[in-house]
Length: 245
Image 1 (cartoon, one colour):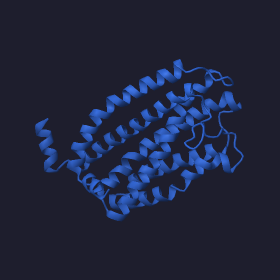
Image 2: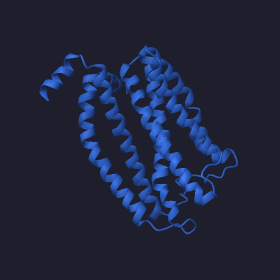
Image 3: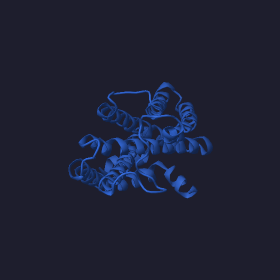
Image 4: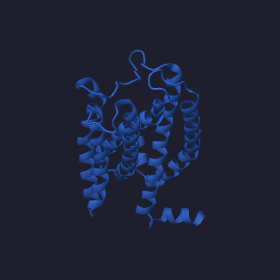
């Protein structure tokens, strides 16, 4: 683990590695999104209760799942930044925050669209929805803190602390439907026990979750590459890249 973290801490190594990874991962992401969306939105059967309105699950659930996982990525980067003072960890936090915020916004927006025909309202102050809204604000808080400080070292430390504190909200999101009375339905996918969704609907959903994970990685890597280019624009290795291009 330390070897990987040490290598990722080198901007030139990261830039070469991430470029190769994005070139391989981007077409895979597009393929997974196209196949998953076609399968879920057009081929999967309608739900016996909700009809075709349930199909927004193929956008809503992947966005929510990856938004939660993305926060852990940001918090882990914050811990690395505080403990080992690795600058690339700061870059990771800054790159992951807007992507996570976008995914959380998608989850909230699609949840509202799904909630209207299901609950009869666009928005309710449900425990799950409220804690997801808090997640959105935590992501935005990290974005805002990076912009608020002129001293980027101080900004990174403040963002790392906020990221780590915010992890308390993640298990609350997961368990909110169990701990409090909630209009939000329980998890349909269960790793321990039988899932509450038929396989004909489950497989395209799993495919879309995988696609969104790949999309998150691609978006974060592209953001990191842009940040590295900006931070090291005067470095010799950047000049060499420009000359080769």
